[in-house]
Figure 1 (cartoon, rainbow, N blue to C red):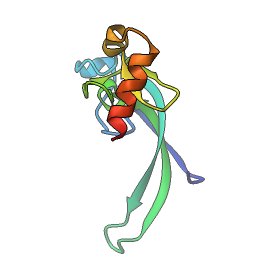
Figure 2: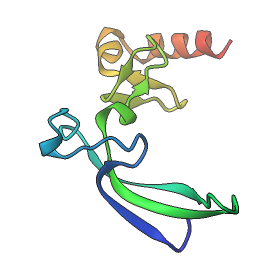
Figure 3: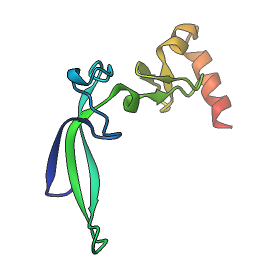
Length: 108
């Protein structure tokens, strides 16, 4: 990250959508404080500088795809092998042996 950090207020640091309550888009729910890297490019010279931005991350940008079912989710578990499993898939697994079998199949 750079030495310059710009606070973008209640904008999402990834999609730049407004996450404020007044926006009325529901993105305030489940948002989290966030920092990210960005670049500013000069229109005249096309030179760029790297900056850090701070704001919030909206729920849509936080979604992670489940390695078992492929559905995007906010509620995940990470297995010791590094697989991301959604809460729904974790409930359907009988035990860790079944999870290891699925991990082996996904590795192929």
